[in-house]
Length: 633
Image 1: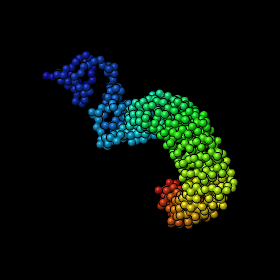
Image 2: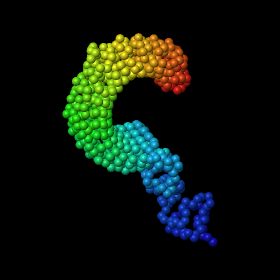
Image 3: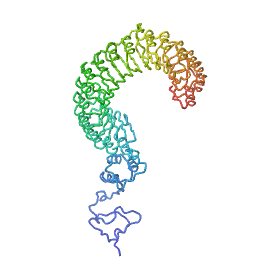
Image 4: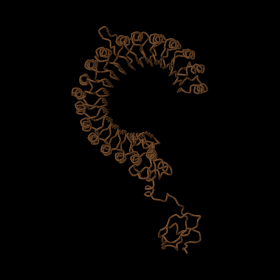
């Protein structure tokens, strides 16, 4: 007869049973109302203290140590089940996020056909952005666990930080464990992340291609060196205001990242000539270089000029220790033969001599932008225009030594097919008459932008009209000195037909000039901006309705238009208006609502902000009837 143990039907173990061993041939008979927790054979040892005191223990997986849970979690059959398990508690989530892909038991994991197809393509489909309060370790852990079964995390952007429980190295470690497909990492103003987190990324995310660090004061050369050693596919590196990163880190990147093609370094006080020269001399594929507010000297620019054979885009800004000699050497070194775009801002070393040298040394330069370069004058601009061979776009901003004579001479003598010319806030320009009989027209120019140059008036505009007969895009924002008579020669001499006209802030213009624009260019005009032209009335809208066949974007904000003008527009069947802006128009009221609805079928944008005579009920009516249109009210 089989032996019986604890026949009372109660499965509690009494203290008197301590030390007894039950062998496998003994029939242990228990109450059918409760399941056996541990199957035979087993040995009773010292009982837990809770049992000695008669306390009732409820079976729970939470009582297992982290090591046991880790072994269970890594054997879950799919990413979806791991993701579901991570929702149980913060403890489970953090444990799940600590499991690396290579630690998952491949013998039990089953992958759906969709997941396997994504893995075959390399993964990295998803993009996640965390900003401000949303940037926490818990969210990063959830991203690390949850994206694994959805194609994998490809891009991660973290902006700002949560002051109480923000992102730390632990959160970044979770990403490193669960997101081996990560290709782009951006950390902006996250001081709580340091070298440890970046080192974990280097260990787990070998496919990383883009690293963007901004105001990351806790990251040093150690973290950047780890990235260089663990991420050989790095192609883009942006470092801004990182006070602890210097030459050593950049030198390692230059040596170990052969695919690097884009570098941006801004306001890093420890970066000097050694770091920059290493990048240019060792990273042979470097094509985009941006150096801003750095303590580099003429030596760095000489290295760029000699070794930048692959550089196509170059931006230099705030280089106060670089002299005229540095820019001249960069030009004459003949290494930047592939350079196509050059932007120089606030560099005192840019002078007439250096800009001439750069014009000669960059044969394929197509885009040139000078900002706040106060030592370049008309002479340098004229010499540059003579030397350059491929220039298509020239932009001059806040260069106060330029005058009308220098600008007109440059436009007349440039030997390339210049297509775009921009002049912004150049205070040296005075509105004087210039003899144009000896100037050759610049027939290739299609786009002219002259913004906020108060000295550029009607006399200068008349010269532009004769000098640039093929204009299609004209932006004259802020030229309050221009009158109808001054603008008329330009309109009459544009042979190709204007497509876009921006007259924002030209408050001296009247309905007369708008009627001329509509009559002369109504067959080609698509965009007309009259924002701030206070003398424009309904008469201009009548001209637009009558003569503009292709107009789809009209801005009459701060103009003296009324409901009657909108009514005229709505009756022009040939108009297919997509964007209409009329903010701050006191003459617009609820009466225009039916006319706006009539314009509605093609309307995708409507700005009626600060039209105080349109009440909330009218706005709701517009929202209901123009459901395809974005309404700003």
